[in-house]
Length: 303
Image (cartoon, rainbow, N blue to C red; front, side, top):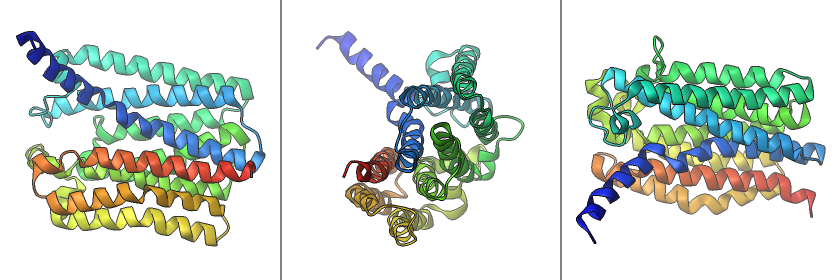
């Protein structure tokens, strides 16, 4: 291998870490689950709307990730973060405008759905999601620095996102969709919760009162275990209440990822270098539990 190869490879890894490809599942899963629940209720799926919503959601997540890098660069919390897009490019203004273009294109996609259906409800929900998402890191709010990020994450990627996805297919609301949104909201919030374990010192230095700063890593690991277990407990509860079909028990096939996450954080919660990858285990849990939950609504329609 050439010397150039040694230089380029770490740079590529930094860019992959900055772009965060696995994190885009947080855009895909709510749309999938909301549409799957709608399919179970209406027995039909509007593919053009589903794909348009999916593409728009991915663009909106790109805006969120890029703009958060910009806002974090302004507070100095990312000064030690080699894989920040702003640090990699050295051009905060460029990253900011690219993020805004992504947002504009994403909202345009939702506008197209609203025009097609002659109903602006979905657009209203998505715009509210974006506004709430902005308050997470955007000035003057920066609610994430007050430790409210997980709550914002739960609301936007859970009840609001799934309500929008469900409505885009059924043009109504339903209790099963709301019940499913609680699970997706929790699993998405777990990803953000896990991202704090390895950066306690940087958060403290920047005045960010994340949940892990407030709780400490040991108590945070116990809270994580409870949140993870709740995904499976709530699934059983919603089946007993008649909101979920029995097929949603398929979510238990994601238990290995849940066990891996809880065990890993429990063992390494106070060791930043070892625990730093726990958010990617959380992404796997979020993806597979969400995929299996959606399948639990879809499969009964074929059997």
